[in-house]
Length: 587
Image 1 (cartoon, rainbow, N blue to C red):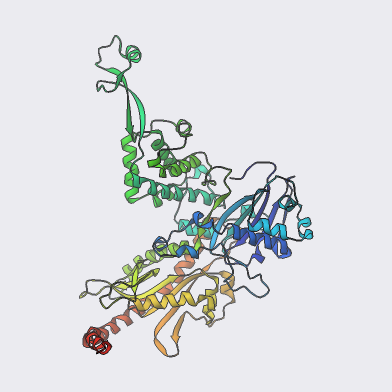
Image 2 (cartoon, rainbow, N blue to C red; image 1 turned 180 degrees about the vertical axis):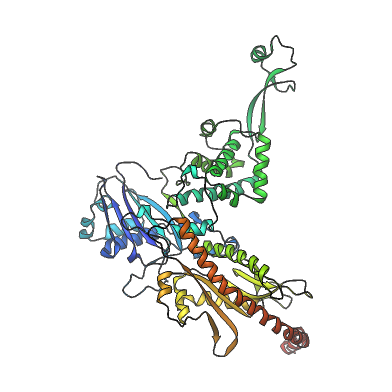
């Protein structure tokens, strides 16, 4: 949450994922609240300042990243791919080689005179006087300045497919990012007036971070705390409260006794706070809560609700009773969960990282993972309908995010684990397990659009090699990628579009598919719902092309497999092992 301190100066940079920082814009708010806005292309000083800031927050980015992909927590080193800034991308001619990476969202840092060893401070101190004089508010951070005022620097990175308003960047509609997060099937409670603006994405984040902290905390068991209870019934325990007993029961032969007792229980103010936060989000985003709270954790929450007899208190009372942070060392994980709940109930969803005096805040979304989840949702939906209506001899299924061991021993054990995005398979009556025949990976890099013209950029070779490795590892015969591209890029393509590629002129057996999804342009009067329907229609058109190709590849694989099995039986490589060992031995 932004500070309201009148001494605060603010610099906000606006950029796009996988784009040159040349294409970014900046808004500078000075002490008198005046605003200056311009393109970075006109200022080498501001471009350098932006790059210095991106290097400063590079270490903090991981703790702010939301990633939905299952393999991200399994595959060592995956977080190294979370890039807020990047020099490895190939820029267009006459563009700055420094690029934004594959993260979108907001990240902010506050600088003041006491800061040392930061890239921003060093950059300002090394800058020419002419550069600093052009932006007077930079002077206060210069080593020669005596000012103790601070400067807030913030970067908002949009998806390159989002609609950006140059004149009012704060009102930019993140429609593409919202579609990735919500998968196009989310409805909101209209009485809250929820709209798709950039700040509303923080609300989606708060539910995610709330459940993430809850999953970490509940491992310790339900939060318990000593509470004093006052009762007036016939089940006496604890201490009789004489004055209250006289007041409530004197003169009536009801068999009740007023008493109080102290007990270590889950019926405490924190658990009431947690359930109140869940209910508040459920009122505002019912479908979002339904999609993210299910299975085991839904049962746990229902059990807490039942055991404590929720609700007992109103929301304002519960907030007041949780002003003291949880301090019990055993339940330390619940401290963050308590902060999340208070932020939600106070409508402070944009500041999930603690008090205002903390230096870093924000949230970053890893768009490649969101793109992968979005496609998985639509492919599964399409395949259910296709298998129902198709006359193909067997059903084609998709298994998302399976782990595959490569370079194993002859028993298929050990080896390195790899995680393809989508694995397509079919079943046969004489085989118990499903048979894999096709691999598909979701890719987000903008250069993949060039593959439709027959060009494979050098920085895509890693993606291409992984697809081939995964394909060979499971005995599939073809592979491919599915990627987004803009409507304007689609219009520029010639009629000779290459969806299917040979691996080389020496291999006319295996094929590589490049499957584009055209992200529609924004109409001047389009609402989010109208635009999202265009995107869903575009995805369906792409999948209408993909499904016949899958049937073709499945049929090819069935024919090949019949001959392959006979060859494997005749030439069992295990029989070669003793002979090799004899040749290896030294007399």
